[in-house]
Image 1 (cartoon, rainbow, N blue to C red):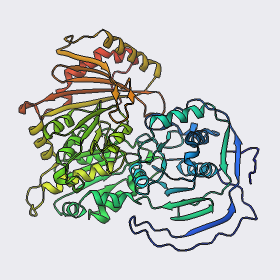
Image 2 (image 1 turned 135 degrees about the horizontal axis):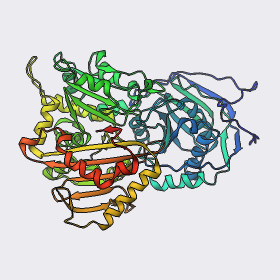
Image 3 (image 1 turned 60 degrees about the vertical axis):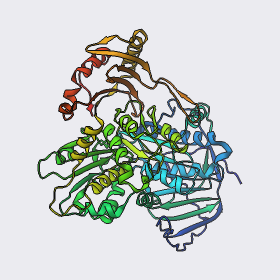
Image 4 (image 1 turned 45 degrees about the horizontal axis):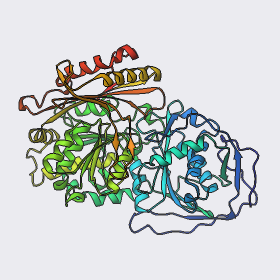
Length: 605
């Protein structure tokens, strides 16, 4: 039966109660043998779901980017903004979504709980059979990917603006991950956008709010919501990838110390259990693990600027921990530090790949191949060449890695934006990267007696540079630039590229080629164009400019600088010193200050 409701006020998320609502009954359920999930109760509603269509109209600005749709929270909380996008998603999937199971969760930021209830009502009204939800609507992005893959779900919705701040005046975001746990391909995101431009009706299932704080199952007639622990499927997967006994042998040593900073974001729901309960680290080894809607007022981006509290601890001298790491808002990014020593993301993925087969059981039979995003430093290229591994250079966006992984071409991949992962999921995975580094340290220190000098993060890095050479790398972020000014700078650079030719001199550097990066996917033949403006020189040095699509307002200009070095006397130079002349050339060529008025970046990595 269909009941037409004339108007739904989207600020009222709870369905009206009815005196005729049936009694809910509960039964106990045993834990799942594979996942360890425990459903504390099953509540059943016997009546049929009423579908309550509500009129709406298109809202501008709902084009989905590489990481979903991100805007200021106030925009998403305005009438029908979120509902329009979610309805457009379901409409774009058509009959394919009917009778399917999806997952839902997010990074714990402000508005996630309320948004979850809107999404559940729309799922019920659009024929979805079941939604698996993280407890309190919390699921790290890689954990959501793991659930989709382990349970063979149709896909999942992830509520996150990643590394961007949270709160009523900050950022909010949402994206859809598809059947392999990967971010939605462009054919889906393009269809979503088309529907947002013509949408006229929202299909709500007339159900009450579901209590997402209690692990258990709520069943309606034809629609089920299962609330699971946030670690469901993901933690058992990590135990299959890594040797937890070997990890514990290192982490529980009295002469080894570590510090993990969850930045009051989603990995706070995972880190204490993994590092302290399972691996034996003292409780003081984890910090900022309370998952807060505004991330404690911080910016949950694990870099040297925004993770300053951790950085100060790691650079505090002889008493600093041996190992430090942080993760971002939704748990897909990571930063790795040694005692007074920073590992760049470009180096990190290369060093993990070089040591993976020896140190991580999941890779005991070797790597299928490796890949990096185009702006990422070329350290991984050197590893691939020396180890005779297939290598791929792809545009920024994790979906490009997913295609390679699904086709069996890639095992380890990474981006310079602090994203590193493998084919165990189809997302960046911050905790995976941290456990990879700890596995390398654990393997290198096997058999070391108490009090014997341990191999350190710095030792591993220097050994790697001596073997493969060092790709000095830095990224300058200019955040919140007026879009018109950023576009004008890009247009200028395109004009420089159009007139540039091999052999041209840019300061002391001789041009090999300059272009706007284009990628043809070797799996499906799709072409991604205009992916970054590159100036590559004959000595393999290069600088790149991109506009980032991960912010919620304005534009972020990203400038990437890289120079390769094999001279042993120069391998330990400070990156900013080593890159100074190339940075100057890049700034002069782009006329960045002239176009934007910015005389310094917001963040230097």
